[in-house]
Length: 185
Image (cartoon, rainbow, N blue to C red; front, side, top):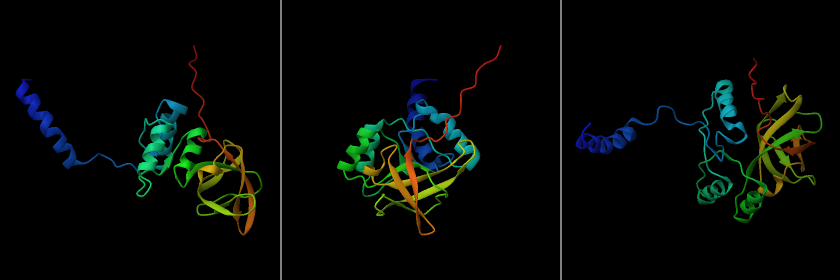
């Protein structure tokens, strides 16, 4: 291909792509979920297969994810973001209002979408986005949005279920990591 055609295609291709749009829009935007880390690739494929949600990979690190959240504070784009403990404290200092956490129910009850999350004194601090019994884990789990200062793994919270505070513990996500297949000879 000659240089004129290459230059012409390089100018036309972005315009054509912009007009054509993407093949499939993302259903959920996640910051800091690269395919190599914590086997996000397998998890996001499983979410797509099981639930039909398309969540594209994102190669931001914790610092970049936090910077993006701060930049979008008044008009958020991401549905969820994952970052380490140090960046959780920085997020609080920067005014990031909520973070997605994993919960394990310590007492009988299943946290459902919209249920209130409370600190141990009983103050409402957030809400559950989804919850269910996890057969592989043999326990009740949930995802919830809470302020960053309540997102420390192994800290205890409560979920209001039918007017009663039911104890829960913050646990790391992803909840389940599929074991790698081993090759047999």
